[in-house]
Image 1 (cartoon, one colour):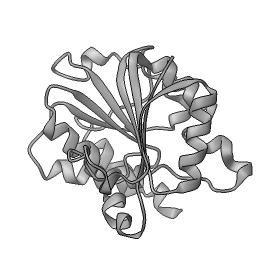
Image 2 (cartoon, helix red, strand yellow):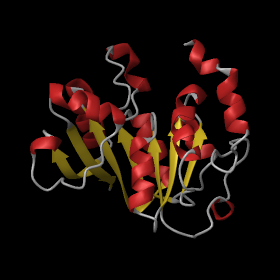
Image 3 (cartoon, one colour):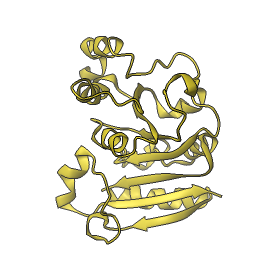
Image 4 (cartoon, helix red, strand yellow):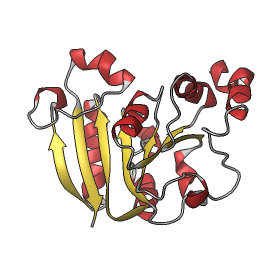
Length: 211
């Protein structure tokens, strides 16, 4: 827990505001990126492997990686400092429960939720990133036809998310029960967590959008 208040992390972030966005006022997306392109975000990016690789593969799309704790965000930041600049990628340290305060309504094409904290106790269900209060935020932020892509290795969170999305209601575009052993997912980009834990069980995936 002490890492979440690491002063060195805060200093590194302040020294690289060309990569890490300030979150003290609502975003004007035209001032964030040099190119006016579709925007996708990852909520809970961890050490950044997924969002960095996405930005490299798809330069025609803008990406923002979001992490709640600055001590985690700096792991992704350090990777970007050591590489060639990615003009289509920015990072931000922020709580997903308040994203609607920063992003314009209907400004995002896709939201990625990769290996979110499962919060396994039933009394903590409101903290899960697929709980209905979060789904309301995503619905406000996504463009018409935009969708959510969700991956987890946690069966309980997968089942909860299916029910939560279905009851919201949302439409399912894809449900996969074993991502790494199914056909048609050869372009899957793994997170650092995914690489570490996929040998121990299936990876579940959901792609869904709002009605």
